[in-house]
Figure (tube, helix red, strand yellow):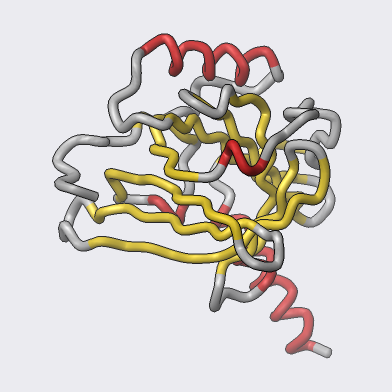
Length: 190
């Protein structure tokens, strides 16, 4: 019994460390997502421009995600970055399942479910220029961890798309303060 308690505490601590922006209470399930989300139009490459701090991307630059269609109808997920210190590439693969309008559940390969699964809510996108993605995880029922991403189709987008995405974040009651710019220079052909 004691080892079970230790495992539960360890799992909770891991969860806390993965979600860098913590807030009191449970996740807001009423944040509006894209109601007529078209997964086929969303496929392809998206470059990360800004995000809340996120442990899996610490020290990363040139971050992008590539989405494709799997034979079973799910979406393939490939995330890539270059470590700013070592210059070495990092990547991870997984899959996403649509669970509601603009709502996906992402699962990364070779990772335990409590670490490798996450909500992926598309708050807004025009499919051709920008997307705003939100993820929230309830932790112990009284605190939650949030991540927000601003993604664009171009590595160096027109500033209007970043501003449009920031407006979406703010209009959903989410803070702009934690946003950190992602370096997208010195990326080579990646």
